[in-house]
Amino acid sequence: MPRLLSDATALVLAAGGSSRLGRPKQLLPLGGATLLDATLSAVRRCGFGQVVLALGGAADEVAATVDLSGVDVVRNPGFGAGCSSSIAAALPAISATSEGLVLMLGDQPEVSPAAVAAVAAVDADLAVCRYDNGLGHPFWLGRSRFGELANLHGDKAVWKLVDAAGDALVTVPVVGDVPADVDTEADYRALLARWDR
Image: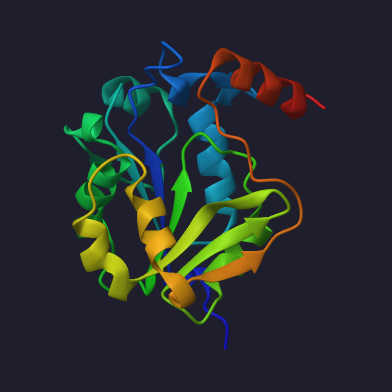
């Protein structure tokens, strides 16, 4: 029987300092709210049993601006050490009853609920989405992977875990391209153009 999202945790990473953008990307205006609001709205529609949000850069501003209802917030003071530090900071907040986590990025509001459900439903402890143009988020990491997650270091460490998984990695076909993230003003303008369509 496929895993239900109500038995899983969404871990949304939104702790970055937005150094390439030069301003907090979590707070970029989008659709009458913010970029992070749009991502969290998409996450809420999935029906997770728990949503954990990792904040770091601009955490106070984000907490004062973004609708964080129904979200367990974890602050990562060491966010400058990369995404892996946010994952490690968030792991203790994950419910003991959760079967695992779906790793999502706070600057990817266009991830589809269908992709989330598909990657979380696999009978494996590590899965990623295989889009038309490559692998991408969201990732599924079963509870048996939490020890490895806690010991990762750096910004692309989860990808190293994926690369090293070999046959243990399940790839889930998803139609369309890898959802775009927002790192630059050009990325943001492109998102705005798609969002307003």
